[in-house]
Length: 276
Image 1 (cartoon, rainbow, N blue to C red):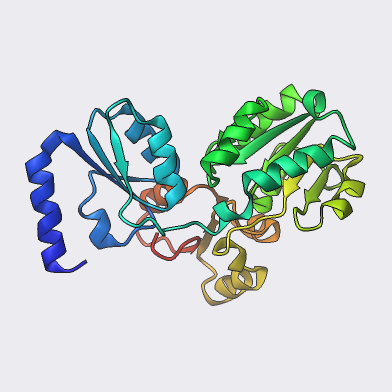
Image 2 (image 1 turned 90 degrees about the horizontal axis):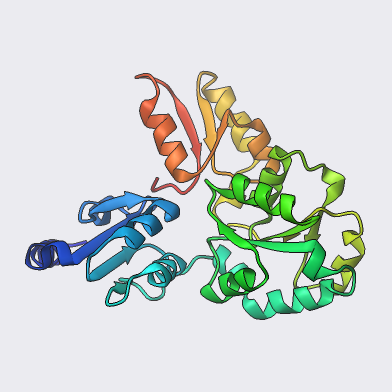
């Protein structure tokens, strides 16, 4: 952000006062965060938006975050996104057409209305969230995934988790779901996916975050070889084998809390988006 733009933003904040709320995700650049009223993860920012009385909410994050804030906005509030093309790779891994097709095909293998409940990660479009709500399911963030998935498994014998298979698998394992009870639904090859569903309690959508999937076990081994004293902390969207090697696992806010509250001189290797 150049000096001219920074000045324009500062003047707008001064002119609009409490009528303006600027929200910035943890992944934003420092010069963006400097202008925000609040910084947080997707859940924290959604709560800020929902509880705000500001007339104008500017959401500095990817599109689905601003879309979620708009869904929660009060009458008369307007939500703006600085970049309409600020997309999330993961959010585009599942669309409502694919999801409805999956539901129809799964009805051939089970009673979907009685046995299956969908859970959508917040990194999805409004259309996907609407379908999940229509079927009695719920949405979650990385910080609430365990609670929401546990709730869903108590309500139905099977759960479909979308669109991040790694977050779903990591969360399912923490809840005690065995490997043989987990199957993957591939929307590109749906016919091949049906055969694996007979014993599945947890059906994972074949999607993944293009950032977190890059972290590999050799990265953890290399860090520990070079810095044996370092603690490894990763996001739960990472591969299960990486999560298994980490000292700590959690959402962006969890990572920030753990690192910032650690003793001075503590070495950390952080597995998430580099701007965090």
